[in-house]
Length: 281
Image (cartoon, rainbow, N blue to C red; front, top):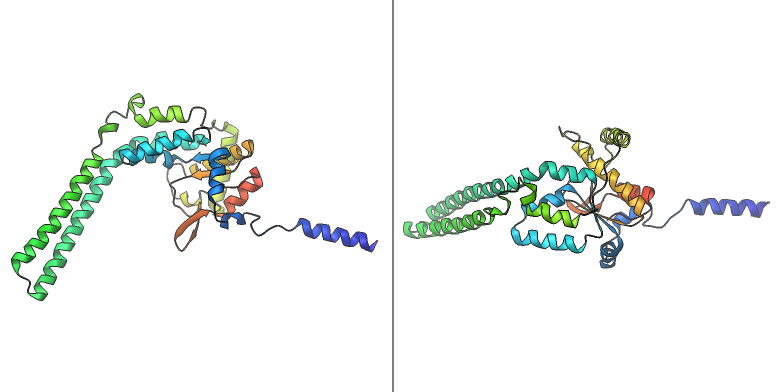
């Protein structure tokens, strides 16, 4: 009858409707302190490889602070097998980069020092500033830059990792052994890996996140997707919201506004909800 038909239409219409933050649109919802408290107490905190590698790049106090935080959160931490593989592949390079980064900064400082000296000399010539006064100004620039260089060199000369090629003598490794006890994902089976890599390649072709920004990488272009695939699986298995911690700044992970990263892409939020039924942060 007409009333039954009407009810059917109403039911059909309502089943194809949602709220303003549904369908991945909760990516635009401001994260609250309560959200973070919930994640830290009952969520899944997934660490990307670069988040772990930062332990080698940070200065000593910051490294200790991060290790302390990870220790407190150890029951909630999880690292995809692919991320752990990338950590081990890149850890010695990360250690070596400490001194390289310091020397790059020092080179930049010296170039800027010459630019400042040139600017002072040009100004002094225009206003006929006394030569001895000009010399004092330039000397103050050199003294300041030299002082900063000394501090940078002192900071980068940390010998904590002098024998880190031996994992038993690497303080980061010894800390992570305890923190990530039973906290690393199992490797995908050969069949699962084959399917996942095929999907990763298709996403690169389709420019679907994550991973398509690595299309030009010579080695391991599928890595980002494999990490994401493992994360989806673990989130589905546990049925809890996910906080993904990464230093990756590419726009196949992040939603950006005016150049600033504001949170995960809506496509990733939607995929996480579709597959695992949970929120992505």
